[in-house]
Figure 1 (tube, rainbow, N blue to C red):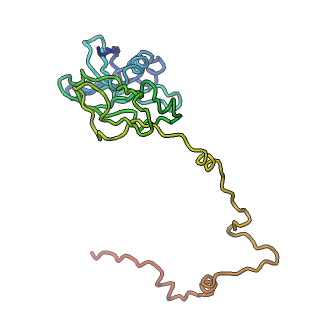
Figure 2 (cartoon, one colour):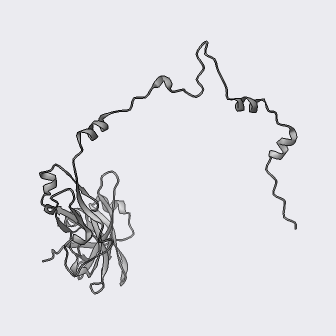
Figure 3 (cartoon, rainbow, N blue to C red):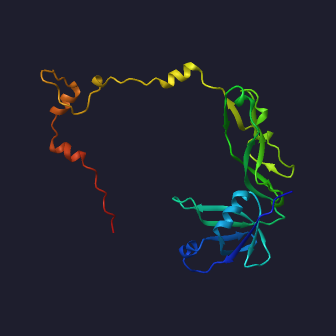
Length: 248
């Protein structure tokens, strides 16, 4: 049974959004192919609770001003860079009769024997996949059984993800989603701990004056260039050519 999520909203006027946020409201917008854009506001705490469970891949029944709820997806949530709280939301009204493309998160469940018994490291190459389906068939996440990863040769590919036949997973089906890397050998760990030592005395600082009594040698070509003199004619040739004025 698909979980249902409900959220109430009010129509937002042209007032300052900062005033809304002070009241614990989040400014938002609703749009869709068959829906006129509507500026709204939702309660911040209520939205956070719904969004934690619904994410961006579950339908939400959005009731605007107590009118008949419409089915929407949370398309984008803008966060405050300091508090990481939602400061603006984009809701997309879906057509329940048309297929849509969206991302569904991937969640690993159970434990991998290659991690528990062989002390390997679990590697997750992807945390979501793109799917296409009818809105009513959307699910919050795709659970993946990690217990099939028994050796370091075992992998879980996109094609191995189990979903309803009504959901089509898009993209490269051979792409690896989960694998387990073997632990590092003692030799590898020793190499990582070794730090290259740099001979400070061998490093010459540009512009450093030679020590007293030290013979200074210069590159022959540099000395020759230093002795060269540029004639006025050569200076003239070095100047960029002027762009001729267009004739009237």
